[in-house]
View 1 (cartoon, rainbow, N blue to C red):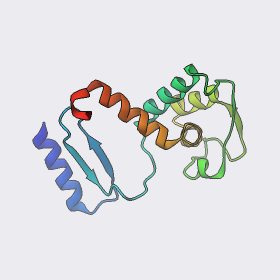
View 2: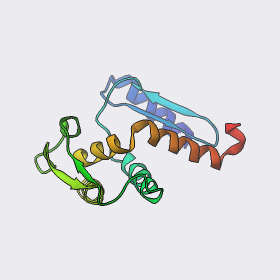
View 3: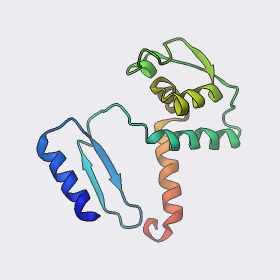
Length: 137
């Protein structure tokens, strides 16, 4: 498996493609990145972690599912014709539904803005360290 990942990463690098990624194995610290400093449109894999963080903050009563959320211009920068529009107002619950069921980029960006990218990354890192306490001390 390690060899196939290495080959894939090497072949992507050689093509000069517009792909970018950053991944790390928490248990070993092995990581790979491609164009990690460039800004790319987000892929859908982060939406599960984002939904988890929104619901975690709801459990902590820092957010509420009936809290209104307005789609702002930066939330809709890569929206599709079927996505939400700038100025649309929905609840956090509706935004979660749009993000997960309809793959709404505008909802995802609005939720990310609400919880904070730094908070999401910090919480993910904290959870990873709790699982691998020996690596994080």
